[in-house]
Amino acid sequence: MKKILTVVGARPQFVKCAAVSSVLRKQYKEVLIHTGQHYDYAMSDVFFEELSIPKPEYHLGVGSASHGVQTSEMLAKIEEIILQEKPNAVMVYGDTNSTLAAALAASKVYVPLIHVEAGLRSFNRRMPEEINRVLTDHTSSLLLCPTETAMENLEREGFLRANVHATCSPEHPVILNVGDVMYDMVRITIRQIEKKGNTKEVLKQFGVVAKQYCLATIHRAENTNDVSALREILSAMAHIASKIPVVLPLHPRTKAIIERENIALPSGVSIIAPLGYADMILLQKNASVVCTDSGGMQKEAFLLQTPCITMREQTEWIETLHDGWNVLTGASASAIIAAYNNAQILEPDTQKQPFGDGFAGEKITQAIGTFIA
Ligand code: UD1
Image 1 (cartoon, rainbow, N blue to C red):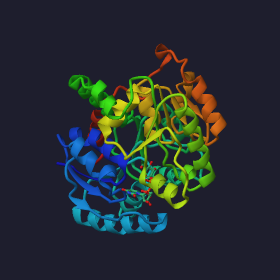
Image 2: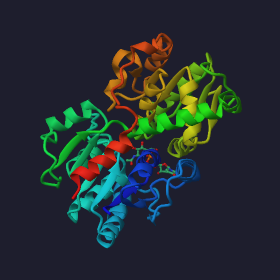
Image 3: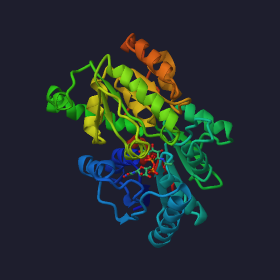
């Protein structure tokens, strides 16, 4: 049985890993490493419990630190485990420091690297995630893309589409469109929510009514480390809250900066702790609009047919911009408010489906069988 060593560490990776692991483990032995990049209950444990992710075989307990310290500590520990476990491949998700650390560790000891969510580009090299993505892709053997746009990005960087079923290697990487893994989890979770039939009650717990509230999140470095950007966003939230209720589950990074800078919380905005996965999907589906700087939420809002305002200058998920489902505003309060005023006029039947069919986990498992020796 092939052995796949999977490395996760940050909140969005737990969701992606949940979608893949349940299918992968039917055919392969998976060994799971949690780097400990995210460690709060609401940022980590809740996802393992709620999404039934198997307990990691290794927990590195790295925690928060500067990029260099955090990444290098993970790198050293992951290298040791790879040498000990001797997997057929190492698998990573997305674009966090945990992704990069595992990519460097695997490539230096010449173990094929599988990158799920390969080929995404914001073309903004000031984003730590962009550096993580580019370096991870260029050390990968099997690059599993969520969209055709991602495939085209990689072709422009010299990668070739797989046209023969030869095994892949660092010298002969293979690129493949398997669709988006987050779509799998949205599909499964929506079915569970519908089965439970308690949407009204859950919304009531958050003090809102379907299609009459805004759901907001803020956590990106560019929107939090830059305090004036954070103030702009919060003032836009206060304006929206004067029209409809705004629910803001607060990332610990943002919370810490608000406290450190003594920023007054916007009145009318309901600030709550980070949410578990099912509640997040339920709140996104029923919101009249989502305001976010998260990559995953732009896509989830799109799949759930909720208009989205993305408080960033660029997006890796350009498909969501077509027909106006998602609008980029940066951190400008006036742009966010203008986008909010326009966000009500969408027609669900204008939507295209660029993210596959919601069965990426199966396609990833199949690709491993085909391309990993
Ligand atoms: C990371 C990813 C980002 C992803 C996000 C999801 C990188 C470079 N960025 O950003 O791509 O969208 O995860 O949330 O890897 N903190 C806690 N408790 C936790 C985790 C973090 O308090 O469990 C606080 C700490 O103050 C920490 C800060 O949040 O310093 C930032 O955490 P970090 O993991 O470095 O980056 P994220 O902003 O979460």
